[in-house]
Image (cartoon, rainbow over all chains, first blue to last red; front, side):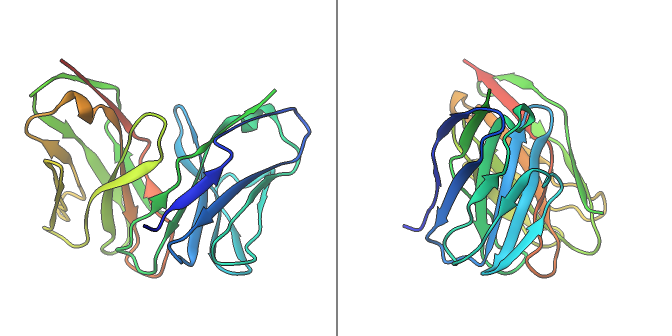
Length: 113
Length: 113
């Protein structure tokens, strides 16, 4: 079965360090998204991509970057981790068309100390 | 821009009670509408969807009807179980292209035996 896999599941890092969260999907979807989930804020979109070499900023993109070198992967990089970036991060993908649902990974819990 | 408003949680019900979680939306045209469910420690999963006015989505005993006249997509279940305890998200997708989904803030549901 197709799936979307995030790694690591848990990560603790120090302020100022660079961190990369991995996302790999086997759905062969063009469209991939990164969200963060925080109490009281629901899901907030960080970055998204509609295909190889395409990346776009979401509503909370400051301090984050993504790259899309192939269809399957969209790694999320925190260039210099801050305590405000402690959160649960979800990667998602969807097929083409407005009726296509999002498929989510199981999330990465990141703690910045 | 597009937006989704869900009823504030948390919601606590006894087993076998009737459930309604309200969801209203603001969007241009005729978006597709979704309900997602998130169990503890997991990513979001698609629960049901509706793609045009008066459509009823249903799954696992849950139902929601796309009401264009009231711009609503309320989630209902006739008899909830303890296993339904989760966070529920309403979401919309514009009816063109592969645009990102807009999510509500989520409603935490707890069912007590």
